[in-house]
Image (cartoon, rainbow, N blue to C red; front, side):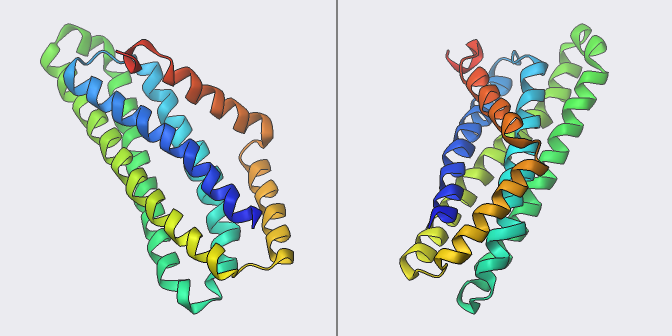
Length: 195
């Protein structure tokens, strides 16, 4: 079941994003010294890789295929609700980043204002990291059940993989996904991540 393994493999990458988001949140709470450009990169990766690409594969292909089995319909309903929650947190994060960016010159002059602008960013990053940890863990258990029950036939598996390629094209293609992975590597090697 390559289609299921593909989603579980995405979860490994998504947990790397979770680690970056959590460390960034901690740094912002402690020192307020993460460059805004790095936070913008985190926001882009969340929106493009996690939501648009990975959740797109689940929502447009995998879940509709497995929803036919009534045993899994309630799980899928909950996952879709959680995806929407993640989207909303990502939107609030982006708005908080844009707000800080629009007031950055003023905030550099006033430490109290800077803290007020940074705190929501730190909070949304932490919430998103907690969401990812919880959500991917539940989905992995769900995927294990799908694999153990051999719910997806070989022909359905091939069809799902074709849908995944379509999702990749919609997310900017293989090159864009590789760029997202490179951005994660970049963030993991930033000084604030390693001290």
